[in-house]
Length: 578
Image (cartoon, rainbow, N blue to C red; front, side, top):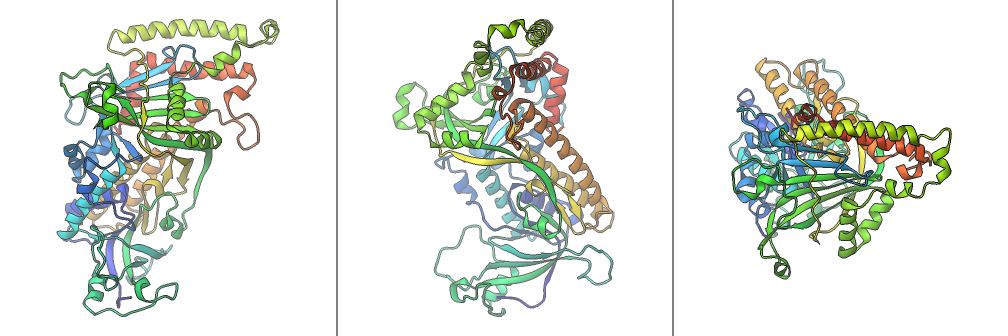
């Protein structure tokens, strides 16, 4: 079905996921955008907030480690407090990262905690937490609840379920008519006159076109496949001064605007699932709070293995199942998110295992002796006497370096720096296992005439630091600020020569720095050498002399960082969004 004419909007957000919805809610709150028309187009709605926050709903496998800056932004749009009230969030105050290469895992590690390294918040008070773990479904449902409220108050318009079928962006911004001054989008939505007897989605909000059709003012057409009846849909063309592309890594909006990307595939997969680490799992001894809330002392852990990092992110405590209560006197247990980055072959092996064998693999990965040290036990004696052996000089360098760094670490511990915390054991697997591809990607530009990219539509990075969504929310915050500045100045919000261009430049550079830093760490610890040329893929495939150089460099980096609190504070506060 189609309606005559077209509607004009100031901003159209394509994609109502976390980043797009957060940007839309914040825009609708701006005094400078009062009277403006804001539209959000989303294909798949989340469940209603009451269902998403129901204690009986299983925890999502898809979780996020939110920085204080990200949680503050969500709080400013009314989407954070519902998660807190429902208890479906888990703040953590410490993080520990260590190397696989050492016999004694407590030698080569780095420990961060909020009290010593987080710095003050906006009120000048020390941050109690490094970040907070939340679920995708709960966050998106909270944002949809807020968008629905804003929709009902006339501050924005939400089309869901709806789909963008076609987009046109003019490269030239010259011209006097509205068509030349706007992007054009063709939307399709379900016809409300069909399947009336079926229950509609709780989040479906009819558009003006749907309401016109329901009232008998629209014209009937046949859908793209030439079918009638139940397959008929409403088709509507709209215009926008600015389109915000928030429709994911494969963004059709970005492609329609002719914006390319560059990057690479890591030839890795991340195995993810929810696990049970017991009532006292991931407990941290670093808490300085006097509160009796057990959330005050929780740690996230990550260990670098030759094929990639493995991490456990603490979730909230959950009542035990009846068959698990006999194991301890506690009636609740802590869940955690497992993220294990590894080769595709190993990922396939891990996802094929039964629960017992998979648990054994996880616990072995966190606590096993170094494969590098084991391999060196079998080194031939003649290598030690070779004229060109790296072993003797490296031993001397390593011994001297370790002495200096260990003394620095001891001194740092006197001022509050913490010793190594042994990893928690995984007891049960509480969800299905999934394996997702990992890649690095950057769009060639974040802005063009009438379009701005945010979130995964603009960039993607390795998940080892949990910064992907935080970068997207920082995009949303910076873009809203740019639109606000442009609107208050009375300028064109869709012109990259105004503040929109400044947004594109700043966020491109910030995200490139973050993404490249994580990529360098991944390559230092992941040993991707030769993956595209058939060469060595892990440290164990390299000559032993080169293994020692890489291992010494990596361990020196970890130990150096851990020995100097000011450097750790800088890294932590940068990652926290300060």
